[in-house]
Amino acid sequence: MARGRNNGEIAAELFLSANTVKTHINRVFAKTGSRDRAAAALYARQHGLD
Image (cartoon, rainbow, N blue to C red; front, side):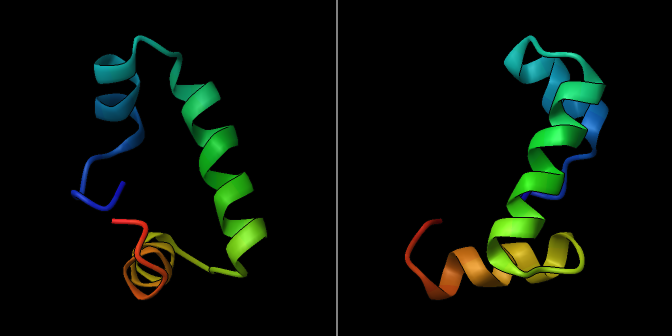
């Protein structure tokens, strides 16, 4: 996600369905309080998760 990949690209790389990726990304948003991918990536950077 932080590399700018869309759900389909992430799914293909990890051998998951796009819906599974979407679910995981929504969980990341909820746990980090992020509204979008950019905010989630910033959160990861600020907390040394990159």
